[in-house]
Amino acid sequence: MLTRIPAIAMASALGILLSAPLAVADTSTSAVRTDAQEKIGDRLDLFERDAVSMRTSLDRYVASMRNPNASASLHAYSLNSTKDQLNSLGRQLDVLEELSPQGTTLQQAAIREARPHLEAVADQLDLAIGMHNDDRRNVRSPEFREAVNEMHQRSDDLYSKVDAITDYEKARNQANEARVATLPDDV
Image (cartoon, rainbow, N blue to C red):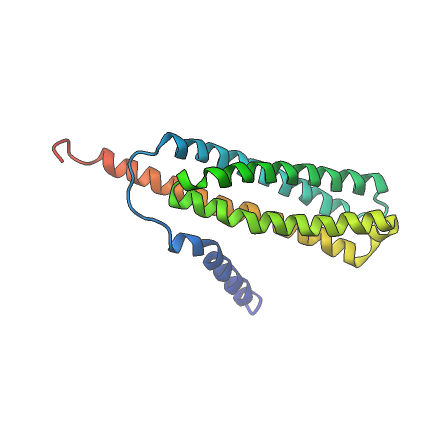
């Protein structure tokens, strides 16, 4: 019973953290989205898919690190793959940031929230690559494992934050559409 209380407290704290941008979100009903907002929505969906792909790759990498005999080529491949995915996400986010002023309040919040998490992944990746390049034996060090675990956690934060905001917007839009569809024709 005692272990359930901290878990419940942590889950509550996580819910508050993820919903913070939603508390200041525009809740006005906008029945029609502009073409720019549709384009941003599509780009955010792609960004989210690529973020979850990076997180999944890092899931596998973290799991493979449990094997003390993991090859040096596995580490090099995983770090380079993460770098490629991160660079792609960075380019996508640059475009989204340019389009952001045309987006809905929630789209702008998702875009704004993505940058610090993406940078946190990049910082941990730079640290891990630096340790790997300095001495290949560093991959067995607790510091290297911590950097990779932090990289994984930050990638999960990135996906979770963007996903929570975009899912909220989609649900809100669906609710607004359903409400509009049930209004009498003479309104």
